[in-house]
Image (cartoon, rainbow, N blue to C red):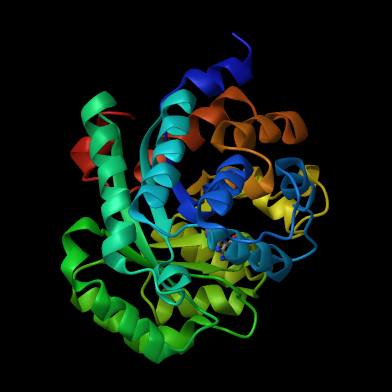
Length: 326
Ligand code: HPA
Ligand code: ZN
């Protein structure tokens, strides 16, 4: 069987996915009309054509503008439901999904609205095809520590729906140390911890995420190769890295997929995984990311198998449930 067919048929987990980054241009267009939001585009094709980025910030500007069409519970239901249907098509049997509360609360959309929409879609996918889903609340790191504390407090009625807390948005100039105290509180509450680090930011930010935030997983982390001691530590502790190849290409973290270091890191024994990050903005869902690795890096069968095993080993599922898929 061709490797691309095997990729699409094998069960896999996705661990780094921003639900707001799965908003399809067609749904964005439809919701803009529904709520009479004026978009700076005159067609779905124009939205798609605008997705050209030269940095993380140039993407984030469009991503936050796009999220403005999400207003009521049904919008958040549709957003989550369309991603979960993609999971079914792509044989993603387990997903750990990030959401950015502040992207919505700062526009006057409350937790009650988006959590109800997410919950309805997730419950339906669990019942209809046994999909397994965990949610990760992410703080926007360009905002203040006080706002992160506030966001955590406002989530209190929904703690039972949330498994982990993370850190995303503009990395440079917003090091993990800015959030050391709020993540101490996050850990005290019993949540797992993840943080974007070493995407555009330096290896030093990965050190801080490990030592100050005590992360269970690093999102991206591809710049760990710049520091031998750090690389050795990540390997020795088997701290998972949720790597996103198409994202790295679209945001110019790399210039060419052939330069991607994911298979080098894998072959060195790091617990790396493949993920799609913001699939509608970066031109592909999870299987497309695996196919890109096969085409640009000649990923072999053993590497594919290890990446699929890693996707479950790096998850927050209890070991017995991970074993079911390994
Ligand atoms: N990096 C940082 N913040 C984000 C991203 C990303 O790739 N996607 C959504 N928020
Ligand atoms: Zn991300």
